[in-house]
Amino acid sequence: MNKAIVRLVPTILDYVEANRAHLRVEYLERVVCILAGAIPDVYMDPKPDPDLATLASIPHVVNFSLRVLELPDSISDLRRIFASFCSMTARHLGTVFLANPDLIDFLVAGTRSPDYHTRCFAQSALVQIYSETAWREWKAGAFQPELLRQLNPGSESLLAHGAPVLRDFLNLVQNFGDTQSGQSHCQLGHALSGFMQENPSVARGILRAPAALLKRLSTILPTIFESCEVALRGSPQSVTAADILRFELLLSRDKTEACAFARSCMERHPFLAYFYHAMTTFPDTLVAPPSCAFYVEKGLRCHASSTFIRRELLAWVAIWYHSTVTTMLNYSPNTDHLRKALVLGEKGLCHASLFMDMTAPDHSRAAEMSAVFTLFNLMSKGDILTPNELESLQERFSKTCMIARNNVMFRLPKECSALELIFARMPTAWGRWGSILSRTDSTGPRWRFGNREFRPAFSVADLKPVTEDPNGEQFLAWLEKLDTATLEEQDSEILGDPDTARRSGEAGLHRCSACFSLNAVVKRCAGCRRTRYCNNTCQRNHWKVHRQVCKAQ
Image (cartoon, rainbow, N blue to C red; front, side, top):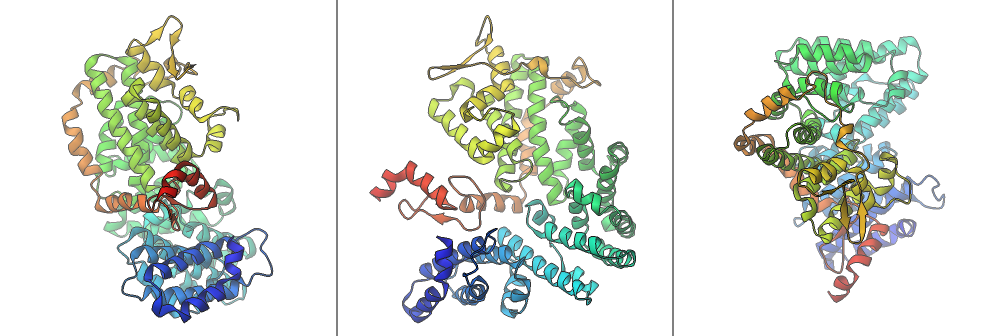
């Protein structure tokens, strides 16, 4: 279908140009959406059709789209779609875009857009354009270090969203490192040091690169990052960035040394303390020590924390609430503690849900957050869930994580259904809560769904308490002091970030209703005008579920 659309690009644009005065703005926007969705897929096909004049079509689409964007009725959604289109194609066509001043002006203006996703896509496109140009000039022997200074990702949220900026930058550095001599390494190191002194977020992002890539860059990175840290410490405003950079650089070398450094920074940077806790506690045990509670709450409320750190803490805090509740039920399942467990469980559900709304489905912790989200739903409602509610919960869980990935993640056989997965691998929620609520038989907890019975795969006895509090005494002391009345007030401080609220509020408009993918080019169902889908497969899935409603309307 996409190849057929690309072949018709000149015809479509000629028709639109000839009848532009009589066409509604909605139609023009739809044309841009179709072209923006079709061309990148065809061009990035592993086996592209040589007969397709894709390179010739893209400039036409760019010029046509820019003219549509000038219309007074053009909406922000179209700007977002077009910026996404530029982001997807700029990696391959940097010189084509760079030769179009109107496009560059549009992308520069997009980096200042009030819309979060438009900013991300525009920043990504600009970085890719400049990185490709720098790489080509380097191969031609005319490399200019100043070009590296233009690779400005703009914000850490862009890196956290998984945009291609970091990947392109790393590819650029890797190519330099693979092909150039030691003298060139020194020149590159000097250029990158100045660049990352201005953009420490990129330095932190590089340290999260795949281990294989870090190994290949090991001869360059230490000198660059150490000089970058020295420069950062020279500015009082950059001490926090320098500490984070030092922590993650040590973490890439020696975990023990990194944790010792994080401990020394606890008072200055509470969120570093929580990273220390996360690296030393998870995922070896599900029981969290109570000493981290103060740092969790203070770290999330710390305004000095970057967007990336806040996102990471949202992920960790959801897991922390999960482990806290399981510890609570393990040590002291009395009525008061059960009430506090419910409150903390709802908080964990809120954090996990917010993280899922802010994050692309392929994020490294997306599957984990989806599991926590499902777990807390089960913990909050237990067997009060109706079959329809349970099926809906299972549907969101399977589609967010993708059931094929879950089978690998949970080491389940392929024939195991998603519903069995939830029952079999959520033992803490079903098994322990079933025991507390006296819904057990002589052989242990059993749960019934329809005519089928399920038994937890393993018991709470498998949970290992941390060595510093083997009997849970510190934990229970902390639990007695826990004031649930202040939790809502804390949440308003933690989750009240206006940028976060805007992003989470917009996520639903650009999330596929079938696979829950955050896709820039989502199409709205022509029948019901409510459901959105991102590709033909999701469209067919939607049609199977809603065919009667869509046909009726």
